[in-house]
Image 1 (cartoon, rainbow, N blue to C red):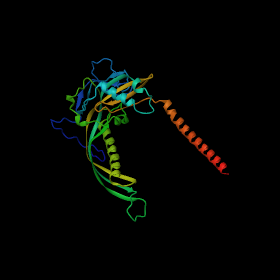
Image 2 (cartoon, one colour):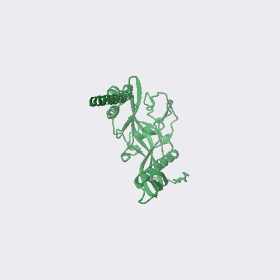
Image 3 (tube, one colour):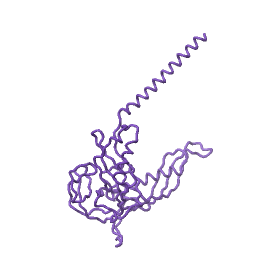
Image 4 (tube, helix red, strand yellow):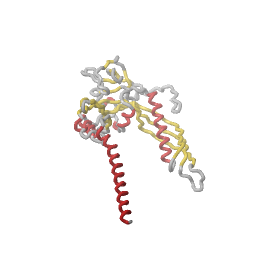
Length: 316
């Protein structure tokens, strides 16, 4: 395909030792009626439950061949380590309840391989911008600049999950993709595997948009001194390729005072994110403290003026 306009090119024949990217694998497929996520389970496992929304209304789809990953990043964190990361994360933050980390109880926890596209790209960018760093003798406040930049992006992730939001995915990144192994070397039978919900043709423009934003920010920060304005980057992607990859994620739900919250842990690095309750008492303390400070300062000023008045009276 053309990296600039997206026009598809005719597919080339693949060599026998490298199967086409459209390689498929057979599995037992289910779809969650609650959130719509598609995933594969062991068909003989009982009590199927969606790891994303906890729905037990799982509808078995007609078994078919699905997109096979090129690489699988294995789980490095076990169940206990993932729970420890969750409790450590819950213990941070001033506005959270003081005993949240100790009182939160895990009610559901499941290891899931989440799909994503990994793009590789090289770029050639022509940029223009205005800099506040003007040369000596210049009359204006801004100085026009321009230049070129060559960039390389070896591992650009674009989420292909239909259940995790882009924000959730970005918050548990990065993953060390160098640890990825062929799917034949990974245990995919005992772990839930979410199917690719974002096709390659839809992931490609997302990757291009990410690259363009990074290039614009890089050119402004690397080449333009001082403050900047009117930054424009004409990005030409000279090479763009991709491969489907599965990433390890612990998906869990914890209960705190009869409320359920979802939580995610990077199954490789332990980086965590999720939802947490807030302490309204601590939130209300902030305006109360500010009001107390204002009243204290006003009282001190009043006392100072009163003392100054007494001193003037004594001088007379």
